[in-house]
Image 1 (cartoon, rainbow, N blue to C red):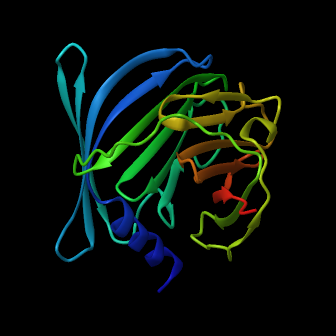
Image 2: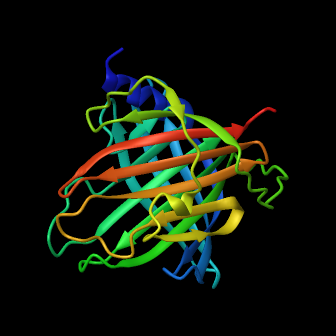
Image 3: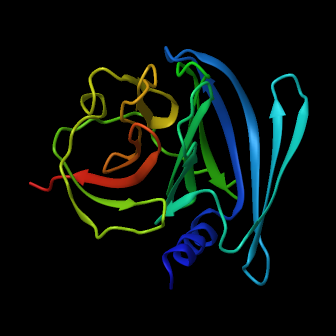
Amino acid sequence: MTPQLQNWHNFCLHHTGDWYSQRTRYSPEGEKIKSWQAISYLHLNEERDEISHQEELTYTNGNKELKDYGIYKKPITSSLFLDNSFCWGTKQLEYNSIFIFEIGLRFENRRILCYTKYNNKGEIEYISTAVEYLNNKVYNQSTQKKMRDNWQGNLKKITPDWIVSQQEESLWKPLGELNKDYITLELNECISVSCPQIIEKRKAFFIAVDWQVNPILLQRGIGYYDSSHFTHFTLESFKPVVE
C-alpha cells in the first residue's frame, strides 16, 4: 500500500461515522467565549472511495445550521492521518493571512479536537475544543487530571508526503516546558494546548495538544512549522512507568 493510500485507509478506519459533541471556544487567556452542539457526519460509501462530510450545528439560542463540506475522493484529503490521530491546517505561511491548525486524537469511541486560529497579524485569536462520541455513545469518564512526572512513551512522525517514521521511544516533558515562552492552557475534558502568542516572521514554531484520556494514558499531538511552511506532525502516547 502506498503512503497516500495508507493515509486514506486511516481516515476511513478511524474517523468515519457520526460524531456527537459539544464545542467550546476560548480566548487566548483561557476564558470561555461560547459553546454549541455539533454532529459531524463522515459517511463512507460502499465502494470505500468517497467520504461525504457534513456538520449539523445547534447554538444556545436554538438556531441550527447545516454545513456541507462536500465529498472527499480517494485518496485525496487535505489532512494527515497518523494511526488514530489527524491534523490539518495552513500549509504555507503567507504575509497578511490568517493561520489555522487543528489536531484530532482518538481513543476507542471518543475523539477530541483542538482548533487554533491566528489573525492576519499573526496574533492568536481563539482556541476551540470538542470532545466527540461516536454514534452518540457517551461513556462516563473521570475529567479530573492526575498529573504524573513518571510517564514513558513512544512517538511516530508523519510528513506532508505521507511518509510515516518508525516508532521510537519518547522522553516525557510537561507540556508547559516544551517552550516556556508559549501560552499553555488547561481547557475542558483534560485537554491542554501550548502555542505561541504570536507567529513571528521567519521563526519556526509548533502547536501542541495534550489529551489525558484516563489516569494511565496521555496522548500528545504536535504540528511543526519552519519559517515558511508546515514540516511534520508527531503523535506521542504516554503511560506511567511501572515500578
